[in-house]
Length: 164
Image (cartoon, rainbow, N blue to C red; front, top):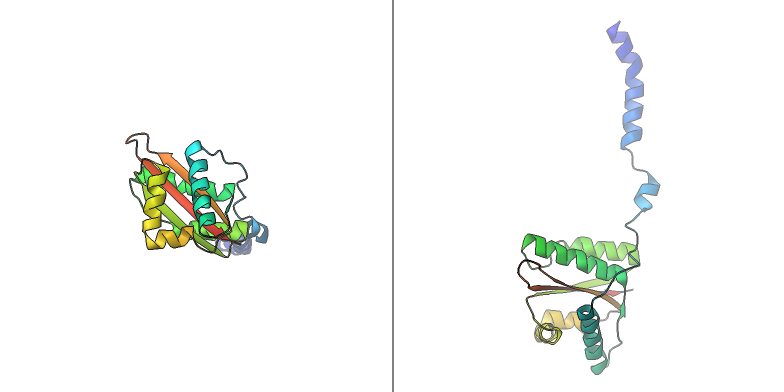
């Protein structure tokens, strides 16, 4: 009797398993929503202005800020502060998100740590070939986050560039 019951319920169990584990196209299409609201602090707005002033001074277009990119930059600053690291950890995931959500064709990133002024961090980026290439690159939009570690008082900077 147990064998008959098992054989009778087995097809239902298989169908239930297949349905519950299959991906739904509507779920796949639901990419992370665009972050439309982001509160910039004075330091962030000033650094964005300084980057755009530099770009214009060398004959390049100013970049338009996008709140979603600044949000992704802020998430990375949180990660660096929480893990006491500085670097481009998980950049591929940030870039992929920006490509999917915003339609970017190119994404690049600058990070920095422990600069006391925006002029200082911008100068350091401009003295580094890779960072300077990002600042002066063929981009159309950007986002930025500057956060201070509440424990150490040190600032963390993430600046992401994007081209549509």
